[in-house]
Every structure is written in structure tokens, then in C-alpha cells.
Image 1: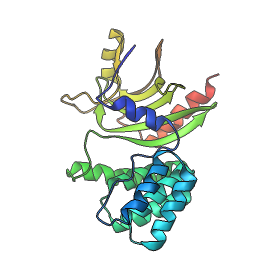
Image 2: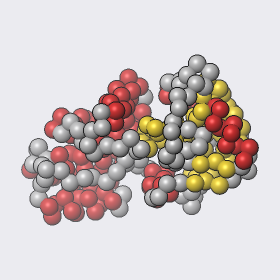
Image 3: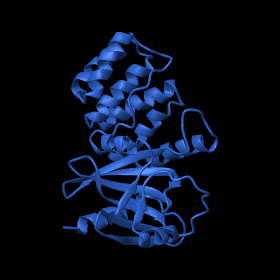
Image 4: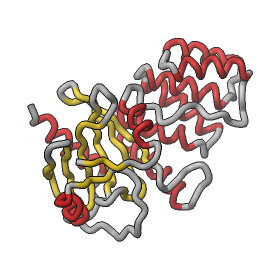
Length: 258
């Protein structure tokens, strides 16, 4: 089975397969602290030295309480440490200072999923969807957002949402499991039932953005794929199911596997 990815997709996938699931590195904003302090803190964050990064970003925030860069970096470090409630508080402070800093909203989606706060999870996703609908600067309709992560039978799964259904099977969500080499070894997709039927018999499955005229999807299928086989978990004939429903069906399926 061939996996066709858009440029740079594999590098992003490898990074996101590892904990923590930081949606991106800390961007420089207009409200900056001392550059030397930020450089050192960002280096620690990039190297996944989250304890040290948090100490440095905390010092920046102490001296520059309105620093978006400092607070965003501290939130990212807390996300890396799995301090989800603390990260949520900092991300909320960041978006209060800079409401259209989309990376903070994207990471809030991940945090709310980790906390199981699904109303907040849906609210943040709706905000991002609305920004894309109106063509807001700094956010792309072709983005694939990481929205969730969980472990079943010792295997970590990363969940990616496509605002625009992606690939030949028009996937809306991909639940991806990575091997030790950082490559996807199996995945589960919520995709167009009809388009998936047309793709699979040819033996070629695409993951990622594939520009085309997208028609409304009437029915969805939750399908699993490995390098050796594929199959179906569930179908949804009444339009797109909620993410919570899809997640529940995926978890039930995975927990039944040996």
C-alpha cells in the first residue's frame, strides 16, 4: 500500500507522533521579551527539556507579564509536561492578549481533549473553523490540525482533523499509529464511504491534501488500514458524526484488538 503525502508532511507527522503534541514552535509576536532570554528558552523547548524551558519562560513572564511569547512558551512547556490544567490557563491568557493567535487555539484543542472537556474542545474547533470560513490571516483552509492523542494497549494514537476533506477518499479525521522509526504503521480514517470504495480496490490510499473539487459527502465510513490489509469499523449514513462519536467507536474497536 502506498502512502502519498504532501511536501513536508512526513516531517510534521514524525514530530507530532512524539509527546508532547505541540502544534508548532513558539512564534515571535509583537509583544516580545528580551530576545536573548527567549532564544535560550526556545532552545530548551525545541530540545524537549520541558522542565528547564518552563523555568526560563516563567522568569520571562515574571519580568514581562504581558509577553505573549513568554506565556505561549510557558504553556507549551506545560503541555510537554502533561500539566494540562496549567497549560490551559496560560493558553487562555495568551488568547486574551492576542485573540487571533491561532496556534494557541490549536493547542487549546489538544489540551481540552486531554482533559476530556468536550464542550470546550468543540468551542475551540468551531472558532478555528469560523476563522477559516472567513479567510482570516494566519490560518489555512488546507491545514491538518492535530486535535487529540490517546494510548490503547501501550500504543499511542495521534488524531488529525482535516478542515477540507483530504485525499482521494476525502478523509475528515485520521487516527494514526506510529512505529519506532516515526513512520505511520497503521491508521483509521473517517472518510467518504463512496470515495473510499473507489480508492481501495486500486490498492492506492492517499493521506494528505489532494486538491480537487469536493462535493458534499452523504455517508461516511470509519475504515482501518495497515500495510497488509484494510477493513471497515462502522458506517454513518446520516451525514457526518460528531468527533466524540467517532472517537468512541475507534476506542471500542482498538480495545477489542489483541
